[in-house]
Amino acid sequence: MNLYILRHASAGTRRANPKLDVKRPIDKEGKQQCLLVGGYLAALNIQFDRVVSSPLKRALQTASLVSNETGYEGKIEITDALAPEASVAKFQELIRALEKYDNVLVVGHNPNLAVFLGSLIAPGRTSIRLRKGAIARVDCARLPATLHWLVDPRILRGIYSKATKRSRSKTSRK
Image (cartoon, rainbow, N blue to C red; front, side, top):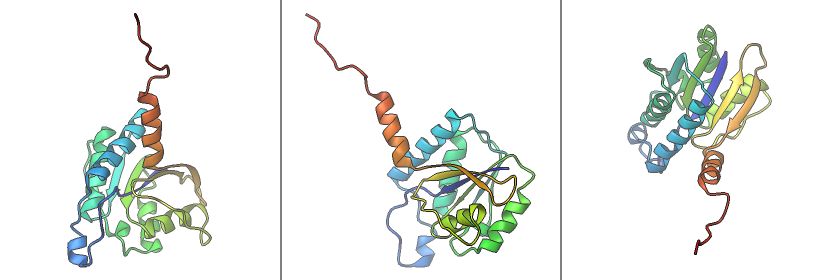
């Protein structure tokens, strides 16, 4: 199974009240991050068999926007195994349940998402920094899993801006 681990996109400032923070949506920058990541995955011709998200609004919005960009037409599964308070054991149980699929996108939160990624590739040894909107591709065919790549939206934004600029400067024709 190819597991794509995505941290939710930018959602502004954390709210002090946990009940309000659960409902915090992604912001304008977050929408742009989703479009960049979704466009990147679409350019790689990645088709998801399953999309799974944390129940929090910002994660669901991220999952929805990215999956739309890749042409995913299925329902987004919601699970507490990706919620901010979820444990590594719950996450690994989720991964075992998803083993029958080829390409799976999971969307969650830091700090536990970075710990979950670390538990797959180097159990008990590492945590990997995931910025908002960052996505990692992990091959889970056997454990420990293999990290194939990790892309940050800032990298995608830089690549996109370079690709859209002209290679030659404008010259006047008289």
